[in-house]
Image (cartoon, rainbow, N blue to C red):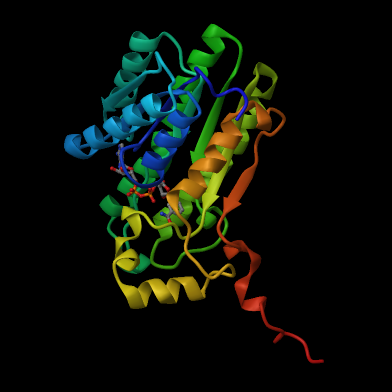
Length: 270
Ligand code: NAI
């Protein structure tokens, strides 16, 4: 894709799932890839090695990759992550706010600790990282790209996951606000909204045949998505092919947002 070769990208929560697939896809496109991870150094080292192998398999000589530890919900960690990338590489071109988590509980039983943690990891983190990225983009001039991994739950309600749905709606609002605020500075901000993707966050159904079959039944295309299918959209939106797109949410959901219950006619008589 045009315009990714040689660019520096930072992916938060980039060692697993969609983040990992995105790191590999950007390496295929010839980008330098910084992978943030929170705690599992071993897991992150495996992803780093995959990105390194991808760089060498596509013969992108001189391309770089790095791991950078930090909890993106914490301001001091985010400052350290950005300082680390900028000290090593001198500039950042693309930020992907990917880190995320969810907890399940009926709302009336949810603790404030759980609520606050989901909001901090999914939304506060994106604010903190976007603020650092924008500061850098404005300082060096020439613009930049910020992409948020939101969810179909940016718009679809999710009972028992109130903080998750709230955080993802917030990510959309944050992204559109920054897109408008900095459009004149050449900074583009967009959201990728995945549906049901086969990653560790969905272990609850990915590892259970019956639950996975049930999940597929809700999806108009009749299958769950793969992380690589989301990564491809991140690559497109970061590339020059998307140079005139800002403030948008692109759903990657097999039709989940198409009101699947209307697949058959039931709401009006014939
Ligand atoms: P995942 O669980 O593999 O990825 C989440 C990553 O975020 C993990 O690597 C985790 O360690 C990291 N992370 C969590 N808290 C962090 C923190 N405080 N600091 C740094 N990293 C942290 O699952 P997946 O699916 O790849 O999730 C990635 C993003 O995609 C999340 O934001 C999730 O909400 C979003 N998403 C996923 C969907 C799916 O069906 N898998 C659907 C819609 C959105």
